Image 1 (cartoon, one colour):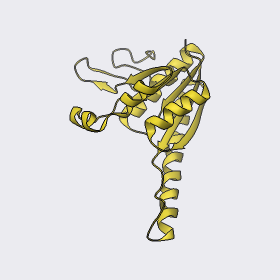
Image 2 (cartoon, one colour):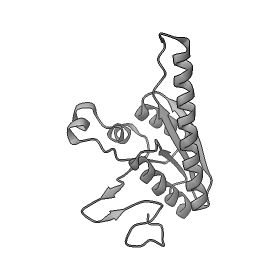
Image 3 (cartoon, helix red, strand yellow):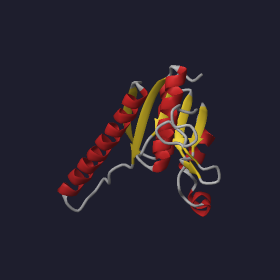
Image 4 (cartoon, helix red, strand yellow):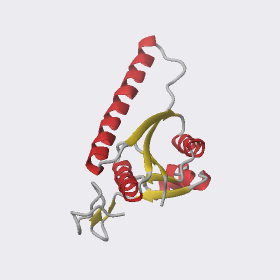
Length: 164
């Protein structure tokens, strides 16, 4: 099983599904789990100095909110989950952290972007899976055709046992 798991977490539906799946994998396999949030770099120049301070404060608040969400999942699964933040392009930052940290699995959520959007700009999940040195699990939050939704480590069909 995987010993070091890195999950990209941004608070989105896909990100929440990825965090839940990663927590279930870490608990079942006894692996170490770290959640990472990647933010875009702040602009180098602003019209007013207070603009940069305001952006930095908003980023800190957003990260703290994500940290609280991660702590709730950690408590629910009774496992420790590390929490980190990086700045830069999400795919590059996650791949770099995974390589440098010796992670053997990256878990990321599938985005809700249209196919056209993904073809035009490239999807973060695609870039991570193309460039990662390790296995990548892309988690979809909801599959209407099967009626299954993976939230809180459970499916609608079996709400008592976390699924992998």
